[in-house]
Length: 197
Image (cartoon, rainbow, N blue to C red; front, side):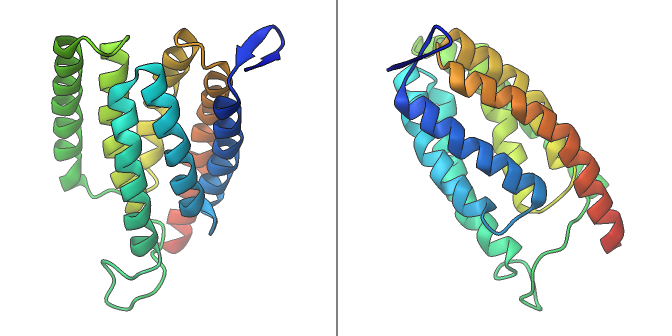
């Protein structure tokens, strides 16, 4: 533990937050280091979440790790591309929205209930809802749809509260920064999508 402005911060929380900062900048730019940083950040947050008692979010980090591998293959055109070329920025088709909203609601309720019944999570509602949104957001991100940023706009404030209450102050501050990048990301990715149309 180290002391920063009077707050006790674990070294792994601080390192995870630094990696997370590079991660969000790379996601905003859709840079080539984005998915490798996603792999690294997921690994760090598996440790942080499980050690803090955020079991749903820790499990979601395992999912994020797997989705990062999938995202690399989709973005590079190895999957879902006949031409095998880099995936362009896109927009979520309207036919997917009822499915996205339904799955998010169902998973939120399921995770919240499960965590409450098990009694292991300190904050089952926040943990469950943020986990459900993360599952859907990562899938949308792997498709390179600009609307994926809306999922993160909801997730980030929940994570700020979750991490702050759990004493992971560096991560809480990181997620405040993420919220700013969500707004910038919507603008940037939408412009790139329109340029590709």
